[in-house]
Amino acid sequence: RGLIQRIQALNMFLKDIYHDEKIIKDDVIPEFLVKQSKGYLKQALGIMPQGGVYVHVAGIDLIRGPSGDFVVLEDNLRTPSGVSYVLENRAIMKRVFPRIFARARIKTVEDYPHWLRDALTELSPVNEVDTRVVVLTPGPYNSAYFEHSFLARRMGCELVQGSDLFVRNKKVYVKTTSGPQRVHVIYRRIDDDFIDPMVFNKKSLLGVPGIFEAYATGNVTLANAIGNGVADDKAIYPYVPEMIRYYLSEKPIISQVTTYICEREEDRRFVLENLKDLVVKAVDASGGY
Image (tube, rainbow, N blue to C red):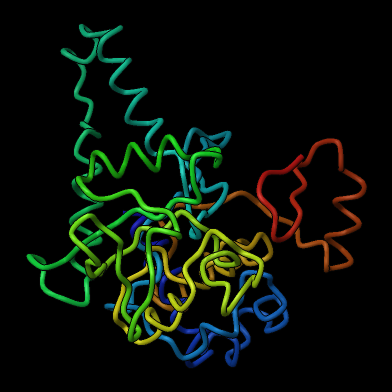
């Protein structure tokens, strides 16, 4: 319930800042934190993803606090990875400790690829029967390529690279032995900067020229949506509980780690005086020290 609540608020935040900017106008979040974030993309302004869904897949890092309760350490809303290792780990654990799984009431995770396929298909611009879903990978040299191929296989859809796709008349097609076939949903594992060399990084060889226009027109669903990076920015993280209160008028079910924003003088002083006891993360970066 807590994760659903949090992701709903984050999705509403993304929809808001790329359209009405109410949360900024009401001074809940400082405008400069949003608009100076590297994850905030002006190209996404005014574009409404299929069904209003920005966050199709969320990787929320949970830890146990000193009290034993779960708290959120980090939100990953761009191209989160790692679920394949959960599935493989569970399969190995069941073989190594079969008696434990026979006695314990542990919920299965095996159906995840099917849930993912169903969730993506629901947001197709065409009906479910005619929908073609593909997994877009940067290629075998990417560190998460195992997961890309694993999920494509388990989802029963094609694994493609940018060179396998092309855009014609603002629609995306995949090259097949039977000729071009329309693609309706793309589960992308390529970052925003590399998805379309005509709009973002012009040197990118990983993306598909024209795919952004097809997405903006509503002819293809991209999961996750373009521009999500601003919502998992480290400087935005401290404001997520306020988002929940603002958009949902609810108290956050899951708390998060106490965070000090070094832009504030008092926070900066505290952090510098207690540096050895703290985890420090750079804004717009993953991980921390």
